[in-house]
Length: 176
Image (cartoon, rainbow, N blue to C red; front, side, top):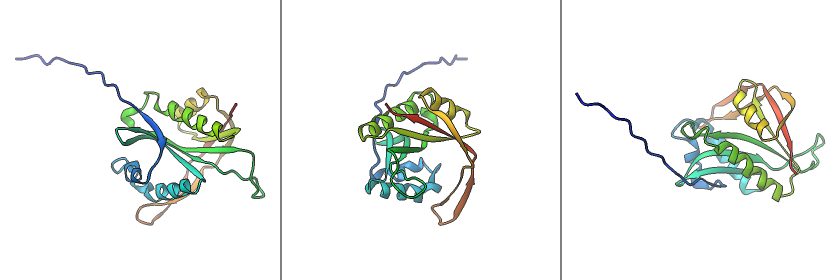
């Protein structure tokens, strides 16, 4: 009988942080895991082209393994342009690449881009049941400022509207 030996291989890879391009949209579905967000990705990309949003990707060999989307325009309760505040959302990293610092790097890159554009604060939501996300944001200087019912909806790739109820914490950070 032969003994199976364990061997290891240490991989090093280059991660490039960049805005999404049209050809990235199908790849953002991550092999079917997020196909239901196809229309969301398309709409967000169109809004990126109009300067209203930014789709920031963590790219490895031409494939987005992480993402964070940024809503660039903020308005007060009367529809007027508000302070330079951005809202980050849809921060995710593929399972195989989690706990490697990619989520942290996406947050830092988003902050750098927003500071360069003159933004003074940012916010992000963390589902109340997602303690890992909240801890990540707090490690990066975000503080809980409010609770939100987390009610939103989207139309999936087949045209069906889905209603989401995901209570969350709203965290904010002042950019210096």
